[in-house]
Structures are given as structure tokens and as C-alpha cells.
Image 1 (cartoon, rainbow, N blue to C red):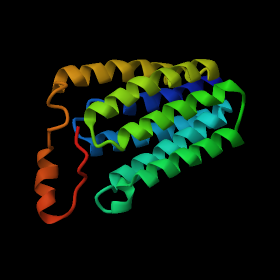
Image 2 (image 1 turned 90 degrees about the horizontal axis):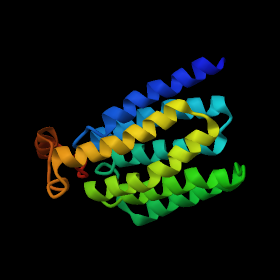
Image 3 (image 1 turned 135 degrees about the horizontal axis):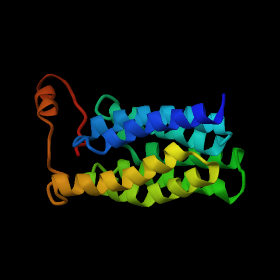
Image 4 (image 1 turned 90 degrees about the vertical axis):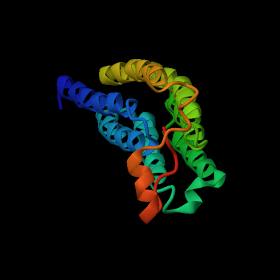
Length: 191
């Protein structure tokens, strides 16, 4: 595949990341990030950036688990997030390509911890820490869509904080999530 097509794949993923940070509720945020991760995973494989690609696979696993947090109670466990980080550590060692391999490890680890807090604020803070690591990684592997996505992610986080307010971020509930609690267990993580 030629370089232009590989870069185009990354820009498709960018759209999903932009949308994800405009979601007020975690369930929607996790879904859009999952789709963006899947598309970037494909681009990273095409670029030969295997540590980043497998780090994105861990992000996909994380987001799938978080989408099922109320269906599978074990997902809420700190053991689950710990297991994910140990898996990520193994992937980093297996795909080691020098210090550059630490960047996806740090980014995914920090965001996994943030996502398990059940706090919209802490999720945003974890992304504010993880995104710069990913930004540098994207520059080094020459993922131009990744660079745009991370820059826009940082901007989108700031916009969502301004839009929803920092103080109210952890208390909002989606009306569809409220009504679905009556008939079935829904995702309790809310942004």
C-alpha cells in the first residue's frame, strides 16, 4: 500500500477520536475511541509500528471491557486493570524497539488507570498525560493522522471541560442510561 493510502487510514481514525471527546457519557466515549483505535491499529501495522499497534489492541480490549462493566462485575476490579497493564508490559517487552516503545506503554497504562476510576475528571486528566506520549510516538513513526488526532484530542478535552464544566462532569447522567437502568443494568460510568 502506498504512503498516501496509509496516511489516509489514519485520518479516518481521526474523525472517531474527535467525536469521542464530545461525548458526555463514557459508554459513547468508549465506543468511538474503540473504533478510532481499531483504525489506527491498522495504520500502525502498515507503518511497521508494532508496539503502538499492540498498544492500540490493548486500548480496544480496555474499551470493550468498559462497555460491559455492568454486565460483567469483575471488570470493575483493580485486578482487571492490573492484568491489562501486565499484558501491556509483556507486549512492550516482546515488541521492544528501543526507548520509543516506552511511549505507548506509558500512554496506555496511564489512561487505563484513569478509565477505571469511574471519574470523568480523572479520565480527562489521564488523557492529558497519555496524549503527549502518543503525540511524540506518532511523530517518530510518522503517523500524520495520529499527530492530528492527539493534538485534537488535547483540544477536545479542553473543550469538553469548558462545555460540561469541571465541577459537574462527574454528576451528569444520560437520559437513555437513566431509563435503561429500570429494565436492565447499564453502564454506570458517566461523562
